[in-house]
Length: 286
Image (cartoon, rainbow, N blue to C red; front, side, top):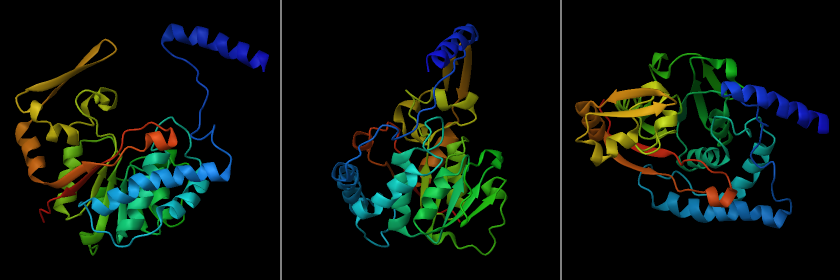
């Protein structure tokens, strides 16, 4: 162990000269409770947040009610055995649990998963017993292939949806693209619920802007303070990026939002910090 630590530090001494660094891979719940009664607190405390929200929200109709504590227990165990515990990109436990619970509560006819990456979101949806169609322009990073999921290496809009009834469907976006474009696409097909990952407000969007490819965010659509701004600029190191604001485009997006809210924050329950998803009920424009 001493030699490994010495080599690790020596490598980082060299790499830091190039603004690089080796890091130890850390997994969610690497350090965790081990007494059953205390582990159950995770599920019961999560339920105390999630159950009232599910009953009170108006974004989608509840198809069934169930014991969330009992539902989360096997989900947690399967998560521990999954390849999705790493903290370096992709959805983590809190948000994956929400995808699972929403799919169980809503019981959509099918789910569209736009942005497969390593396969975590498709996996979480599939555990709720729903049909999942997962899309990514590059499936080479898929870490786990769930048998019940249909994986397609293309954008979801290129798929032949002829004959599909979208009236009881759900779409999840974690594809690092323009979220207004995605909202418009969902609305055009009459999809009743869209879930957005990486929807950050003005004050914290910069690390996930991807040179502007992932803009605008839904948060920009909802931000009244941006209505008088001509553009947004940010720095990545010493490089400055500028994103012009198309207010007619943002106004079109506002007209397509029937209802929206963020999921409740469960980070204090699990100790896993992540931005809760944005949910949108689009106005159908078909």
